[in-house]
Amino acid sequence: MPTTVYYGTLVHSISLKEMEIISSGVLIVNEEGAIVQIEKDIKDLESFLATSGHKDSKIHILGAEQFLVPGFVDTHAHAPQYMFAGSGMDLQLLEWLDTHVFPCESAFKSVEHAGKAYTKVIERFLLNGTTTCSWFATIHLGGCKKLVDIIQDLGQRAYVGKVNMDQNAPDYYIEDTESSLNDTRTFIEYVQEKKSNLITPVVTPRFAITCSTPLMNGLSQLANEYNVPIQTHLCENHDEIDFTCSLFKDSKDYTSVYDDHHLLNERSYMAHCVHMTDAEIDMLAERKTGIAHCANSNFSLHSGVCDVRRFLEKGVKVGLGTDVAGGFSPSMLDAVRSTFFASKTVKILHRDGPLKDKDYAPLTPSELLYLATLGGAQVLGLQGQIGNFEKNKAFDALWVDLEHGSIDLMGGETMHQKIEKFLFNGSDQNLKHVYVQGRRVAGKSTQ
Ligand SMILES: *[C@@H]1O[C@H](CO)[C@@H](O)[C@H](O)[C@H]1NC(C)=O
Ligand SMILES: *[C@@H]1O[C@H](CO)[C@@H](O)[C@H](O)[C@H]1NC(C)=O
Ligand SMILES: *[C@@H]1O[C@H](CO)[C@@H](O)[C@H](O)[C@H]1NC(C)=O
Ligand SMILES: CC(=O)N[C@H]1CO[C@H](CO)[C@@H](O)[C@@H]1O
Ligand SMILES: [Zn+2]
Image (cartoon, rainbow, N blue to C red; front, side, top):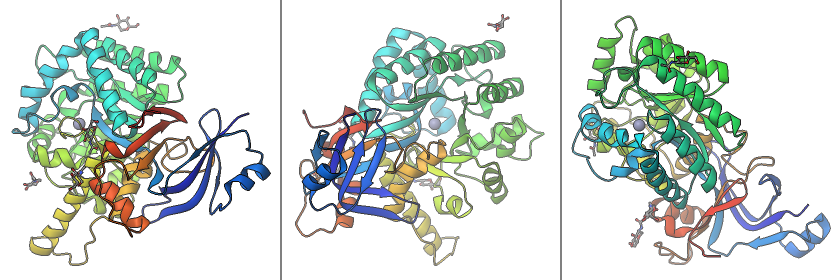
């Protein structure tokens, strides 16, 4: 059976602490898009191919200033909100929802409108190198199905959630509890019947404020029944936390609201988690629940800065999210940079502010690469399938070309420096090819 061979430099994360750079690497992908073999230091490709039985393979040889990295994993984005991405940054969370989000999302009742907007947003995310994304859609069943169809056509790997909200929302954008649960069931079945190995339905209560106790209990039952993951928002800003605690007085804190409704387990992941007590972080660690860290929106909606190191040290799984459109950029490279600034901000607060931990270590470039790839895969429970280059994992990858695009190479850079230049100064212009499950789905190169 014909395979595809990639020959050149491979860069990926083995763990949070360890980034591996493989030079003269050979990576072999089978027809199903799975990695079947990886070799290091192959000086003579011809003789390797002749002796290993891959003479008839399709061969791709990477240039000197090119390398492969695993595709980016965005653990949190709102597909309909791409409509106003890059605007409406003057408000904080709860006002912003009423002013920008709910009017925008309610328009996705029209499947035609949804189709146009969703096509644009998925194409854009793929061009920016996001091979896997966890999406919030809207409350509308028709639009949600449309999003799944578009993702399937365009070839992204995705978790897709129909949003649920049955209280504290405007009359024009709210559901009753029973139809919310019914539509969620129908949606889950619709996705599962496709038997796609790329698209997974995810139970998606918007956040506790907009979900009644019967709704949250019903959703956790559905997640159990269909064995699907759960995503929502947690502890994004102070007003949100106060409002939540006033609605659910029987729960000890915001995190317990979800726990008391059986929504925290090892397949669930929470966006933001900016303001968390130690007890709440411990609870996430105990339940093996992951975190989608969205630094751009923390800043943009001035919700707060999240101390990612604190989560990692407690053994909580962390990935990055663009949080379009609370975050203004669809690019995971931007998420990497915002996370870097947030981490430096925490460092400054330690040095000059109240925190006073002199040894606090901000995140390093290789840790940032990990969070954007393997870390995100772990949050989504996909670490057995994607996140780095390992035998039997899917070939979800970016073919990075540093020669064409916005980066200036001055000569003499080490491979580590080139990777840093890509992370901090690279763009979609440097993505020659974007692959999901071995299939080319986007890229700057016309070939
Ligand atoms: C929900 O589904 C049940 C079972 O199919 C049905 O009896 C009920 O009428 C539905 N309710 C709504 C509000 O759609
Ligand atoms: C990288 O730097 C170049 C040169 O300063 C600049 O033109 C380009 O916009 C930068 N790219 C990004 C993505 O910031
Ligand atoms: C994301 O893609 C758009 C369009 O291709 C591009 O203009 C933008 O610069 C990209 N962002 C980054 C950070 O690469
Ligand atoms: C750039 C920016 O808006 N940063 C904010 C991040 O969040 C903290 C905490 O709310 C604010 O103090 C910063 O101003
Ligand atoms: Zn969000």
